[in-house]
Image (tube, chains in turn purple, yellow, green, red):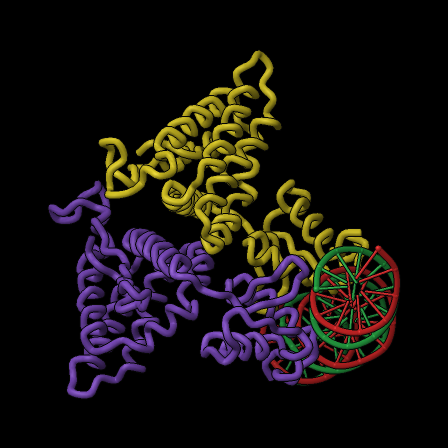
Length: 226
Length: 226
DNA sequence: CCATTGCCATTTGTATACAATAGACTCGGC
DNA sequence: GCCGAGTCTATTGTATACAAATGGCAATGG
């Protein structure tokens, strides 16, 4: 049996990400407890975690509301994510082992397969994409970076954007992941600032996001050569 | 009367930052509750917040330990802080108002007074330094950025470093803050990508930290022209 | 009509009791 | 002596009762 607080966390998080409770809405501990069929104690626990995730906020008297997202917030979240993912890639380039490179390649290959067919398997693509990013973050070996980034990658606006990717977006992501992989030098060739004539650490790709004039996100990209 | 959970949070946090409980040590909820003279409930609350601050970690069975810091962790924390403070300064440059500029100048002036005398007032310097950074972050108007950064600025290693600044470090900080202030264009001159012949947004200073060979931090700087 | 005050309902904060669990330890069996 | 099963203890997880505080609302006075 999983813990009640974990169930509550997952349930409330899903409610927020899916838009089941609207941004700006107040949510009371008791109401959530009833919906999750647990007592207030694990709900309180879950709310603290969701607060750290920035999915909820508290007013001055500790009442809880679902976070709202202004256009400025969204741009900011993209900028921050871009910076942090770049940092992850830089660190990963210095630390990733042969195994890690294999795993990255496998995930990206699966992404390619999922999208280079008549009827793309979006769900499969997104899952391997997520795993790819997770693997890069893993190779970066920075719990702090992982902790900060996890607060950003699953924000509602980014999550919803991913749901609306079309095939071109997906192929672009795939291609850019390839570039990142090529930029990672193999293990053991990382001394003296040079890797086979190329400077080391390499000039790495970074994430990019495109915001349309209306504030709708067209393409949250992943790794793009800058 | 302040809330018990706030008191517990502050008390435990101080224990950790001051080294009163050693890094790596296990801490039980009940023991903390006794030391803080509150029940376990507010302690649990405090622990969730400290977890988000990365001051504690949990093992697989949810037991709580004070975070440990490897040299790699420390470098990483500095890099991350540098990135995030830079981002804050960039955003602040586009958003800060006349009032904000005045406040920044006042804090830096106070820092200068505190350190350009025979017997520097370190505590006063550090307080205004903190306020200066807070004001920049405030002007950046990004709750997300503020949330991420707050997880990094008060980490034990950085905190202890600040306690050991000597007068030269302090003067260097002061000077570099001046440079940052000069780089901020006044309100109303921020259109068209040019501010009186200088490109806008300006190439902004960023934070820098110096790590000695032994892993001891010599100077955590604040804003340095890059 | 508006502002102020006091009351009430709602919501969060805290303590405590008890349940569940993980890790340590003991005691046999081999 | 070593290994494993079972037990025991320390620690965390959950429910619940009650306390405190906040915000809304209505009554009252100007």
